[in-house]
Length: 221
Image (cartoon, rainbow, N blue to C red):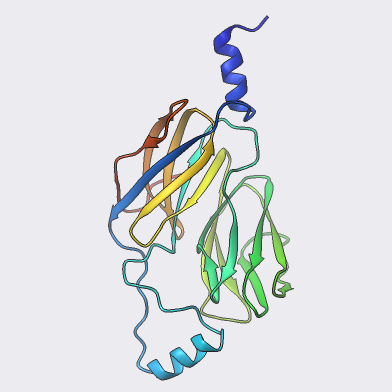
């Protein structure tokens, strides 16, 4: 017969325990900055016609992704990605190694996703409302692009113990929901790099509020 400690551990591992929330924020070094091209009229014409995304604020974190890693056998929580406004939302993507990740097309026009250096991946067009599945082996990160719209860029990370994903708001805040209690590594990814990491323990019955994380230079995953 299993003891109480073993039973609790199994519940966490298989996603059967209570599900809690994790809240936090990032601060410090900013993400990529919006370009200030000379031809603003041409830029905004393309925005209005759906060919380019809206210009982001300088302190936007659309290229930053917060993830939790740890011992968890259920499907990754909140790891949903898409094309929106002409670009990838967010542009930094993570998936569990050995699975597939879906990129939905939320735009009103076709995209043709490319993954530089990923074995066996063939770029194919995805129309509005469609999705493209990417097989994610061990390795990476891989650079993402669009063979139709050259301004689209992003990165795909393969993570062995991915538990959950959370996007980061322009003000730097993020939130994970439905996370089983237990110990995890909270990681902040930006582009091809890991820029922050902290060990956290999600308690049962209440939201975990994490102190702000300072973005730094690349760290190993």
